[in-house]
Image 1 (cartoon, one colour):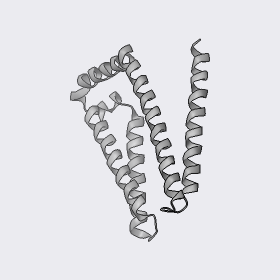
Image 2 (tube, rainbow, N blue to C red):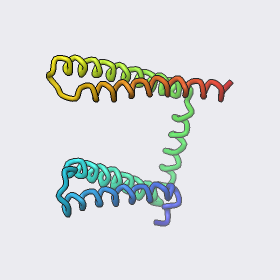
Image 3 (cartoon, helix red, strand yellow):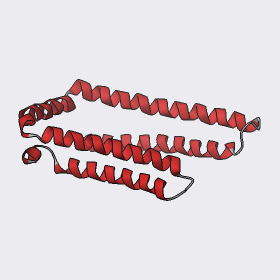
Length: 154
């Protein structure tokens, strides 16, 4: 544990918290019989899996013999984060993902509305209403965030 000063202690605490959360979810499934067993199993596996990976990385990079390698890794990550081309590409890909998400939600909204009109599904109006609300929220939030960033950097 001597080399643990190389890596942030917060990583250790986050890993432990994830594992504990996963264990609580799985213990709930084992001890109680609820309708949420499937969801709790998924959350339990996700918590234990991701927490275990965080803990593994923490202890792997905290060992004294990997100190120099870890410092190089951090240096490379800083370079990658501040590279202008990669920053622009991340922004562009985020924009395309945002637009794709809105298009998929819009198409899904239309499909559900048609299926509801044909009485193939029940409660389609609720789904269409929720998706429409989501689309409006995305559009308004996108505009607000853009104006905020524009003011901030002008």
